[in-house]
Image 1: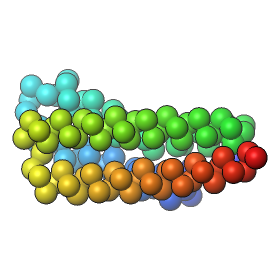
Image 2: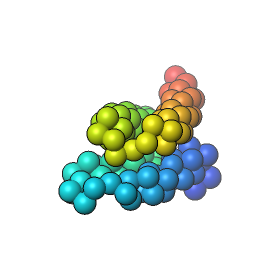
Image 3: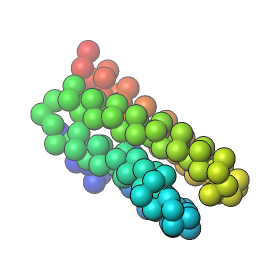
Length: 120
């Protein structure tokens, strides 16, 4: 079993989640239960699924939770694109968030690959 608090992908995705909460803080009030909420749920789902996966009894199960975390990351990417298109996020802020999200995705994919190699 892995200790999620020691995993760099968990730390990085948690930091990213905190940044997303700050980034969406200035969204229009009309988006409080819409896009803002959805973006925040997707962001928090990434470190949450990584943490939950570490509690599983096998790397096969853990791998599944890493897949779910990646799905949430791609969902978040889509939502950030929409928020940018709606001018809720400035272009430079969007670019920074996208770059950080890509970093989290790449780290998770590499870690997932290592876990899958241990299955074989």
